[in-house]
Image 1 (tube, rainbow, N blue to C red):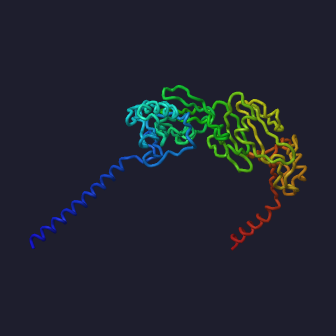
Image 2 (spheres, rainbow, N blue to C red):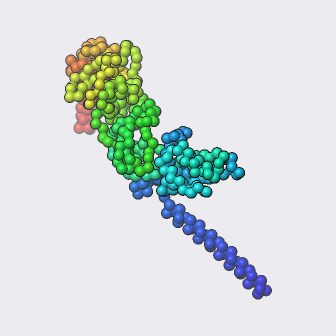
Image 3 (cartoon, helix red, strand yellow):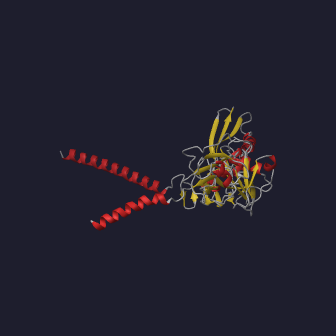
Length: 420
């Protein structure tokens, strides 16, 4: 009986120890996981990539170009040998020194080589061992490295991205471009601060020009400068709808939006409109027209949108307004015939009020207001020039005869209270 109890006690003790070790091991793993940063979050001044080569492939925008992709430390590659006595395949990483350790051959310096160049070097080295075999070098997963975003971005700092990411990817990771930052003169620098290229991201976003959105390189710096030359565009432009950094004022979608858009030296209005998108303007009552305000001037010019205007070079500070309600003027309020009237260049407030039959019995004959497309409302004079899309509002005038019944009621109530 003693022997059986002792044996049972020993078994219980062993089971307890096993359970305790499992619990401790689980706690240890939990602590390790707490110490490891999550992928995709910024740790200190470094934002980690959202993918890991041990868990998930880096997302690609398309097929890798073997003649342009350059190998570097951290690339995961496949070395395959066919046609020998036994087919062989190795999945290998390029070391931090830029070397690929190939079985039976030793280390090969592949950093900086394209996939085509690296495969040719591999064939030369392996030909001694495999004379008639076919040898290939393929990229399995691109490497990740540190890159730097500086200048007019919302979150400047150090980020970790992959060799297939582009300048635009880094700018998005850095929170986008600040108000007043340039979309069109972004500088891509080497880690030694040598200029690689000056890029126009607006051209990439609109035209899909990959040359305007270069691939990142190991340790490169992306610098976003401030805007130098800009024009103000008012209206509806399809390609600027999501560009918060250039939006100055957003009104009703079908009425008015205002953008500050940078232009490059020598560009014309036609060049800029190709990037921002054809302005959405109604086509009724003739060809589209534009309201232009030159820098330093107060006069507004209403001219047709023709080839002569499109070929004019842009000037810093010029305002171009593309009215959505192009050929209409709206007369509202206390007038005899409220409604919309066809815009005619040069007509004044008084002349449009005449078309609307003038102020009604209730309308003021001394005061009226003019509401512009941008939402501003000003007290106007009869001789004020009207622009397309403007709204003329006539308020009601004060009538003493309306006040008498109110005063009589108040007086009656007061008398009742006093003599009650």
